[in-house]
Image 1: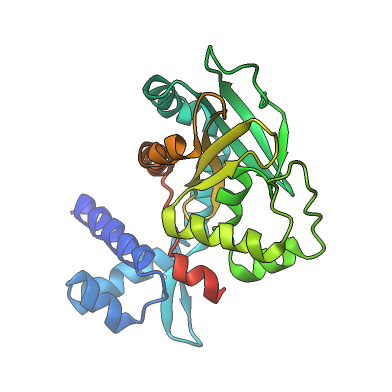
Image 2: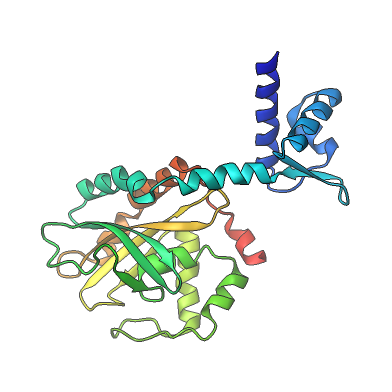
Length: 260
């Protein structure tokens, strides 16, 4: 009997979390298929245990603070580069190029781990090194999934320093690059930071759809073209999606980013 209650409560939490909006009592009944008396009991348990919260003003139920405490504690306990390592090795074995993982750090991307090709002509990225957000594939892959209002604030008075002849220094052109990421699922850098290096990046998301890391493949223009790397984007995105899944993350709804 107890296990049945636990099973039903977990099912109820899943329904409310997947709805992506607070639910009324009637909507909970409709979506779960359980009878009203059972739903009343489960909702009461959920609210008492702080797994659910009841908004008496709108008369709706939503996830409670204890759920987010559990998730935050789980996130604090993992090392994203360790979780992503198998996928990084998979990409490294597929392509004769460099593979890295990076995380956001203000107006820069910080690289945590680098798998360097034997024919990389000397790596640019090293663990702990940083790249500006506007001229790196990593920066574009991260920024593209910020809500539009956050982007506007972040890019206000941003210094689009020109590092090569191909660096994007115009904010409208840069926003067009972000639209490319939203449409195709990866960012690209065609010799915008260094004259001879190019790369692609795909984001890893957390449980609320925020970009928290990027997987990257980069090479030198003398060895590969942008067309080569763009042809590898499917495998890169697949690896990023698997890392996202491993940490319980979800990709955001791109349309919702424009509304926030």
